[in-house]
Picture 1 (cartoon, rainbow, N blue to C red):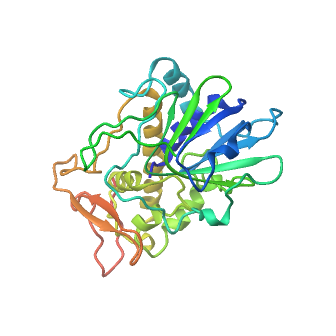
Picture 2: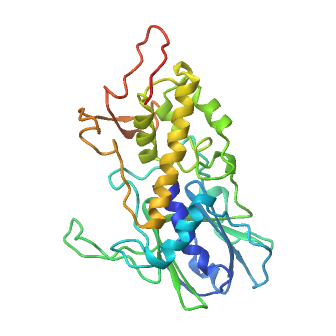
Picture 3: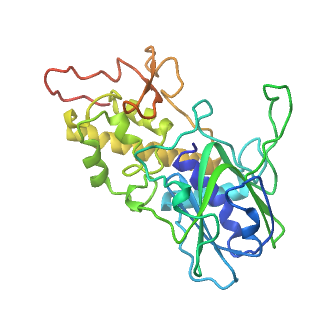
Length: 333
């Protein structure tokens, strides 16, 4: 599924429609009937980790916006992107699809993903109605245009992707949501302290979680502590910190864990900044055959026994595995 930086870009694309009324709806969603959004006003939008939240009200009166601003270093880049650096090759108002095109769609069993059955198929009662959007593997948001087929399917048909939800607004534009799950809730159920791109991200909480006696590659994907972190960020942060994916956090030094959190935040922020500046994402280990030092890269599906297994790339020389006998200080770059 799209990781935190991509969902923040989706939030940026949706934000200009805040304050407008939905005048027409469409889409293939059966669980969420698109017509329930007819005539509602989009009053606010928030992003938390891998989830996008949209608030709809029955009238145009709205309180002060509560949407998450971009971290201050990225605000300038976002403004410049709107003016001079649109997403390459997809048109000025469109958004690329998923970050990880070869992995099966999955929700982290240790994350904050709440089954849709616990929410509702109709807008929540009360003045505020929040629509929670969770994106799948090829999830995306398109503005004022629809996604088009880039190649034929297995049957040889050139069929355009079908949007799950389409919202036409009174201002003349429209939004198209692809490959996502949607459900109504009274308000966003989130913890900004675990969002890796939030100014309220709690390093102490993250470090405590990483110090558990389990492989750090498991903990990094736990959305309770690293909301918005996905498989790409996991692989890149571990390589840049020089830590083997299966290293148990309880055996790593405090300085190694600090370095790992630093690389998580830095890579995520750089990735987001690149999205707004129109520069391609650069990875050092993810989907590579060799690391930057020229060593052969290993690849294996790793995850909790009986749980989701995620493809993991690592360099056995740059990310040595700790011996089982005695704890050692792992040297990181």
